[in-house]
Image 1: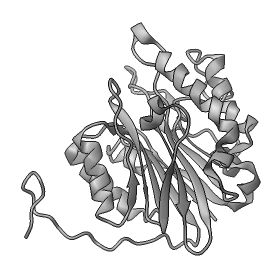
Image 2 (image 1 turned 135 degrees about the vertical axis):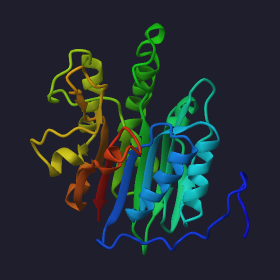
Image 3 (image 1 turned 180 degrees about the horizontal axis):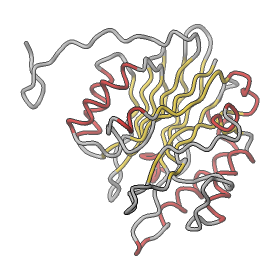
Length: 277
């Protein structure tokens, strides 16, 4: 039996089980800069979800990020893993078990490691435009919000033209960990500024619909939780989002959080699963 680069036996991958729901299922998940052992467990869990497309955020810049792509490629996924940027520990990874995948340039080169845009060809003549995005967090005190604001400003510049850039009349999905909340998020946190709420609302301004809000109006659900207080309680945040082009709202079949991988401690984020025709 052959072995991998660290001497482990290479087990032939099991056949990938395509989604049986008839639509295209997209799994969106922050993998919390996992180390190798947990990254392997994350891939095992992801494969059991039978997603057609996977969008991963907070992917490590080094060998573990490459490992995630290699493991998914071994199960028939085509992977887009941007090269890391100097001084940034994270990037995005988009994997698609579909007919064709073509990367498209969006905005400044300096942010391509956190923003991957693709034209995805599905069965027959159908297709999908996809942007996987990981917005920087607020950052250290000495550089508070500098990277976050710069990234958001770059997105706002190309967002009005993203459907033209992707060059398709097919649905366009923008998904990932945006590190921002909606203005009426419950509970309300005073630390977030107007400029952050404005960024969330810029998607609606550019004719994109929050799929979770559309399918689950009024629900208060969180995808990430802060540190525990003395009484054991923790603040919850809905950081992980999926936006769908307005004209394709009728194509959305379902959009829900899956909290199991967070409860399994595979990541500190819940996964978001979107199914679209």
